[in-house]
Length: 225
Image (cartoon, rainbow, N blue to C red; front, top):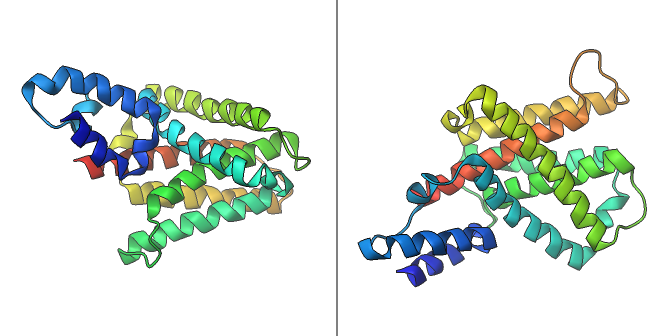
């Protein structure tokens, strides 16, 4: 049964997470006697949101590291506003696919949400240290972890206050909120980074990371239901 579950998961992006496989193996050992195939609903019962974030992070970080090895930190040349535009392209493609119900390019919306997560982390790094020279892989990964984990801490604080209200939202709503946040960021950038009473660019990027991860969790749950 466990091998069937592995085979099934290998076809999806989620299979790439070492964290997920360890959890699956543990659960499969507990469920083997019942002869039931594991699914997301069963694992969700014992996984809290922080653990789900760790699963998504493992997948996004893996892609980030692979691209580091292919391209280095070439993104260090980009100004934050250019990364904003790149994130906007990805968010608009997601909305287009949602509205049309299909895509002509094989890649669906899951890789786009993952790309939004990674580009948002990169933009936070650029805001902090500015465009410049390449980073060594070790430094680039450490910064990724630091800036991703601060988003996770924000999620934990908000979940405490809002009692995981996001679980009742639609993926399309996350898309619209992300696009709204991006338009706010572009306006702030056009105003030289100044705001009167509103949150700044970094706060909006934190929210974009978290809403993208919420969407990925929802999509994962839908696939496994």
